[in-house]
Image (cartoon, rainbow, N blue to C red; front, side):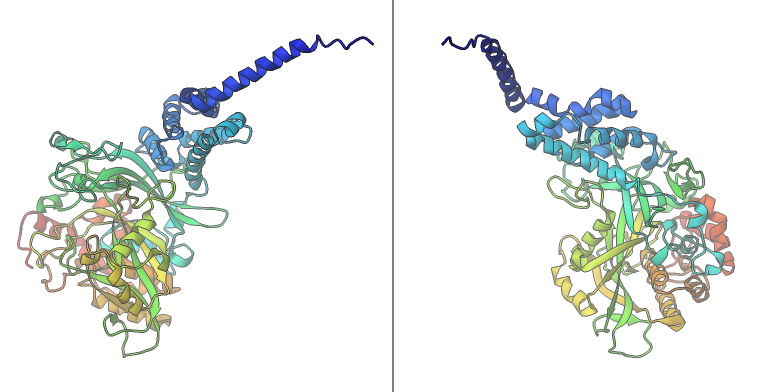
Amino acid sequence: MSGVDASWLSPLANIAGIIGGLLLLYVGLVRFVPPFQTFLILRPLSWRNARRAGLDRQTWRHLRRDAKAHVSGRTTRPGAVLGDLLRMHGDPEHPAPWTPWRTALEKFIGRATAPDSPLLAARFIVPEQVERLDELLHGIAELLARFDRVAPVPRTAALRPTGGGNGVASSTFASALSGAAVLVDAGASRGGAADSILTWAATTYRDDETQRSQRETYEGTRRGLVVDDSSRLGDYDGRLLDLDGVTLAANSSDGEVSFVLETAETSYRATEPPSRLAAKGLTPASYDESLPVFRVATGQGGRDGDTHATYRRLRAGTQQRPRTVPVTSYVSLMLRSRPVPDVEVHGLEAATRAPVDMLVLCRRSAATRNGSGTLSATAGGVIELDQKAVRLDTDDLGAPDVTGAALREMTEELGISPDEVTAVPVAVFVATLEGPRSRRPGRGSGQVVASALHLGSTAMSLSGLLAARQNASATRGAFEVDSPEAFAMLPGKGGLDAFVTAVRAAADRLDQHGLLSCFYAALRFYPSGVVEAFTEAFEVPWWALPWTGEEQGGRFRLVRDVRQMMPDDAERIERAVPGWRSSWDELPQRLDREANGGDIGG
């Protein structure tokens, strides 16, 4: 029997050997040669795909650079990547979250993360690196998707009268009552509160160029922060947020309401004198309206270019004399508790041991720089971004966490765990407060800062709140609080009247945060009649009253005229309460008297 001819197998074996060798070489290159490995993994981020998505080359290069660094082992958080991109695309005239480049970026990342993207082989050979890329891209996509869920609310809806309100919107009345520039609120929304605060943060660093020669670069961040040699971590070199714009936005499918903040990075140093950007420590000359001042303009834009959207652009100073508007976050607690001897409860006509609903505020200590001795929100302070390896007010994706900042401050000042409190945002306003200076000379000279105000609900009692104070941070917040005080919130119109009467009685000690906490807590607790009750209780607006212990016509409470700050709203604010007209007429003269160093008593 003749043998089988197997000569034809030899070429196949050679081919198989060549293919096997190439596969081994491919695997070796991918596994052990970093440049080739990175090239393969980043194939979905090719310029061809970017061009198809409508992405510009500069954005593509920055995104690919950050992705390459992340895949190579340097951790890059999605919020930082998006902040870098926003720095390149900042548009002072339009709301950034809804600009076209964001849509192109979203489309590009969608293509790169699709199931059929050319990463199948790499997923088997270098799964860790592919997983890192997926993590980064999906994180950026999640940040972008937050702004897809909401769209700017029309101005007509935002200015709808609240619970009757004598035809006045809650934000308009709150500005008239407090003198603060209330940019957005949720008074017309269900429950009187928003569902979330979304933050669109650029890494553009706001600093005073004239001071840079005296400082060194801060190596703990790649944002180019500059600090004094003697600065401490968490002090002047801390990274803060500077507010650029605010949008009231809503989800049309489920009615969810959000405050969208557009911000840029700054630092403590940039907010302090002698920086040209200073926001604190205002001098008497800064009352002069001829100097660069803060302004709010009703912006254009929105998803469909709606010129009537509730979009507010902040104008701080001029190009020659810019200013910062640091973003702060505050929370005031609403709880149900029996009164206790160590906490004064306002608005209760007789002693009672029964549990009552109440709003808790805190008296600020003499150690605070502004508002010493005033009755303010329960807790709050400046939003501080991550510093070196210390995570502060950012979420899991690296975006600023405004609500988390308020809860962190609450833990530092009062020792209350964030898990004990559910906080909802109720308003974003610019505080224009002149604190009582007579108690501590050189302090309380005024500031212009943005504040996100929250109301927090908790199952804690007053006794539990007092007990928690032993857990407060002695170095970061406990020293700022003297003691809590509460305002009873009894049901019905009688309860509302008693609450507002107690607020009016304490008006000479309340600061803007405390006053607005009372107003928005009432909107949230009582179904109607809140604006009417405050109008009846306050014969003049809060800002026209003297601080406790100071003479009528003495030191003034405001550093800015809210009508000058919000020219588009000035007429509505003036007309909010006809009986307050004389106070508005006297306001310019009172500010001039402060600026010119006249007899300001105290």
